[in-house]
Structure formats: structure tokens, C-alpha cells
Amino acid sequence: RQLASSPSPLSLRKMRRMKSRTRRLPSYNLFIVCLHLFTAVLTGGTSIVDTAPLLTPQFATNITHRTNLCNRQLLLRTGALEFSDVLRGLNLNVGLLYTPENGYVNYNEETGDFEDENPGFWIEILDELALRAGFSWRHSYGIIRPLFVDSNSLNPNATTTDLLVWTVNTYDFTFGEWDGTVDRMKLGVDFPTGFSDTSTILIANKNTAGESSSFHPFAFLRPFDIPVWGAIVATIFLTGITYRTIHKLYSVAESRDYNTSNHVHGINIFYSAMAATGHVQFQPVTHGESK
Image (cartoon, rainbow, N blue to C red; front, side, top):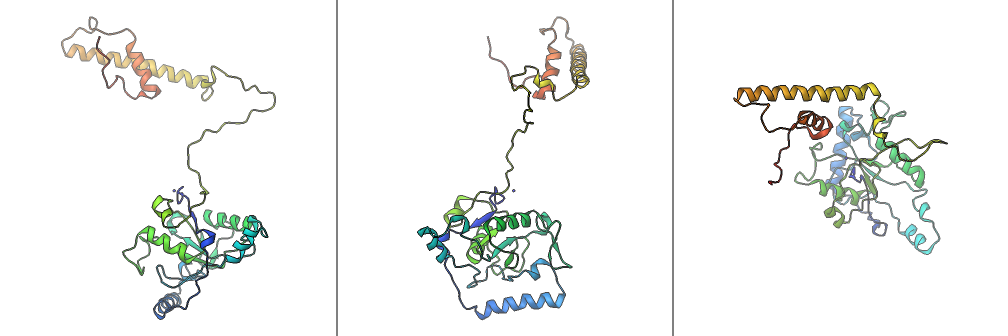
């Protein structure tokens, strides 16, 4: 996992910084793009890396797919546009973090598109997000590959943070497992609330009509049936008896009288009960306070 966090996997730049950066592509970057296209055609490659709508080499300079939102920001400030409609009708460019092994993106190489019935968890989340906000993205995304996957990076010494910063400066936003760290936030990367919560929670059935919600002192017995609880109790007693026998044999081997030694009757049953309920040891690992 925020993914990126929670992991918070969705990364957006602040809207006030979204300014158009339309620039002419340098001949070097144009050569890299043509090289990628030529390789895909020559090898007959139909992978998502070769057929993504935005074939932009990672860490390529002076290439931007950012959308100009200055006008909409002005309308939002003046009250002429509702916040829920800020992205409605736009075609946003997404930097989609892609690792084939994670199974979050299912791409059909024969059709050259995502699977219809099961496109993948991330694709379903993106489609739902686009549906609610009113924007489109299916025909304007680029593939971002992790550094351990991409061996043709223009910046071989880059870190994952460098890749994240380059991605949010190149696309409108990026979607994937990005960790929302303080250092990355200081660099201007904004991490909204993540879409996956992996925290530990307790789940119980809601009380039906007529069912009392009062305290039940024997509610702890409900997880198991009576025969199961009987087997647990029997196991505790048998374990205690076995431990007593072993302890007695050990005392005989050490030339000590077990019956006259300083012990409490039933202590072995107590030890086995402690082990069965989670103590995991028959005897404490620390000594009690001296008298």
C-alpha cells in the first residue's frame, strides 16, 4: 500500500499553479519519441507501454501535458462556477503508474485497450472519479513505470521522488501507489485522501428489530459452539497434566522431591491456560518483586 499510502495514491498539483506551459519540443526529445514509436512498430508491440495515447519518455524535458485551468479558477473565485463542476467537460491528462505484476491494471494486448469486464482496480477507480467529476481521461493518459522497471530512463540516477515530481509537472495528475511524505509535500505535491483504507477495524452485524443491545456477560462464548469450548477446556487440562508429569520427571532426574518442593497445587493448569489464551509460555519470563 497510500497507496501512495495510504499510501495516498492520487497526486494533484494545486489549481492555482496550473498554468499552461506550451513549448516547442526540442529536437532531442522529438528524436526520443520517434525512437519509441519506431521500436513499437518494428517489434509489433501492442503493450500498454507502446500504445498509450501519450508516449512521453520519462524525465523528458520541456514536454508538458498540463491543462490550463486558469479560467475555471477565476470563475470559481467569483462564484460563477460551483466547485463540483470545476473539471466537468474537460479531458485531463493522467500519468498512470503501471506495474504489470500488481494486477491493478488489466490491459488487453489484442484489442489495444483495457479489459471490458475487469479493467483493473485502478481503472475502475479512475472511471468512477471521472464520472463523478465529469471529466474524461481514457484517451489522454501516459504510462509511468517505476524506476526498477524502466531501464531506458533519461535520468538513470533519479529517485522515486524525482519521478513523482516530474510526473505531476508533466501531467494534470498522477494515479498510483505514491507515498505521501512530508518531503514530497514540501516540493509542491498534493496528496488528497487515499481511496484504500487498510486500517484494522471491528465489524459486527447491526441489531435487528426487537433485538436488545444490552450487555451480555457471556457474549464471549458466542464465537464457538459448546463442543468447541469443551474441546478447548479439555486441551487445557490435558496440557496441564502433561506439563505436571514432565516437571515431576525432571525433578526426579535432578534428585529433587517434587512433592516437597515449593509449588502451588493446580499451578500447571494455570500455566497451560495462560499458554492457551495467548501468553504463549508456561512460565513468566520475569521474576516477581522480592518480599
